[in-house]
Length: 211
Image (cartoon, rainbow, N blue to C red; front, side):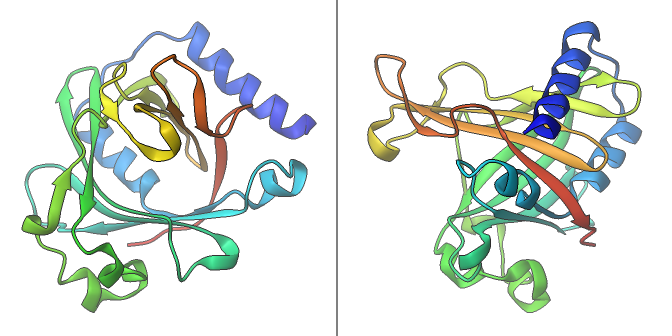
């Protein structure tokens, strides 16, 4: 628990005392490389039983497209990797000289793509007309440290959700070279949290790169 406390404290201090730094196409390329990979929350789950051991895979797709970087994303409880609870496509692109956007898409018939992060034939059948944009759920990222630390979130209450009685969801993300912290929460009309971790985000440690 001490390890987790110090990690989150250091990230919060970086955010508090750093101003937003400029970004460009080179910054975008470096961030895309950091996001490409296999991550898990095993260490956090071992230290705090209120967190699950989650495996997160982010596999680059459509590498020749000129509109930023694209990923197939799959997230599952480690013991049930054949039944992922989240499958998405992300489009990472430069919005302006201080902001990088990660646009989020759902997939039509997502079960047909399970395991696509390790199966090029499945990746090959993902088409743009199979994507459904999640309006209001994009993450707006800002560089907060010269070493390449990014922090961002969804805007306000724009990401609608009906899961477990929620009316909207929020996502906060911090991305570092070897890990990312992701805190997804659902809120009802009264602003009460109805799902998601309560004490802080999930800490995903990078295990390998996916190219």
